[in-house]
Amino acid sequence: MNFPIEKSLIIVGSISTRYGIKSAFENHLPIDLLEYRLDSILLELSLKEAIAELQGALCCRSLPALLTIRSKKEGGLIELSDSERSDLFERFYPFVDSVDLEWQQLSKIFKVYSLYKKGGKKIILSIHTLDRFLDLDGFVSSLPQIQQLEPDFVKLAVRIENLSQLKALTNLFFSFPDIPWALMGIGDYSTLSRVVLSALGSRLVYGYVDKPAALGQPSVLDLKESFQRLGIIKK
Image (cartoon, rainbow, N blue to C red; front, top):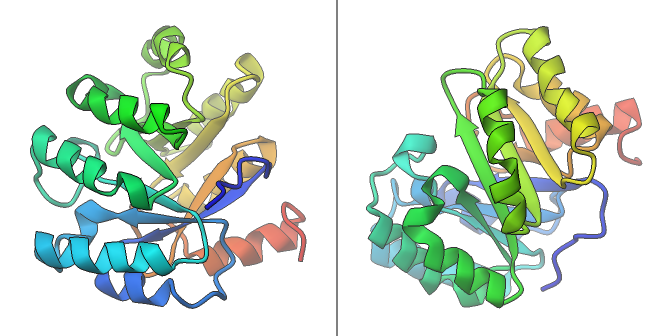
């Protein structure tokens, strides 16, 4: 299934529960891409059950799919070894169109990056700082290494506690305009950051389908209403 890479703003609907897997069959969601948070889904289902139900859903879906298996360090909800995560990424490779891989953990699962890259799947390289704002100077120093990998999106999901931090994040658009950014805040500024950053050029914006996948994450329906009201997307 074709990834909507041509769209200037891609609305991602996150699915984190067994109920969400089933509800995604309903084709009324205001989204462009389905994200399956397997680390969260595994809280409700055994590994065997999760694989069976998710593969069944992926075979029948009407939207492109993104697979995310977050590590505990970056907000994952279940402890999985690097080997276990790699095995799951490889198992679902034929069924999904894109994958979210953590930059800081990439060396441990680099074979997953190589597999998806060689197969023409879209790759999001992400960094999460759940309890603090990002060290921007440190991040910028790592950008040449990130760009060498040619990810389709560079995603930052960081704790924002004031407007000055949100402004600092927006500067990335102007300092590095050629990078396909996916920027968002976590916490009290979650919704505001999605509106501001999407309006300025963030390519991906995340909302939940069934339950929040991150602190303060709005629903996809709330995102649609806010974006239409502000003219970021058409009604």
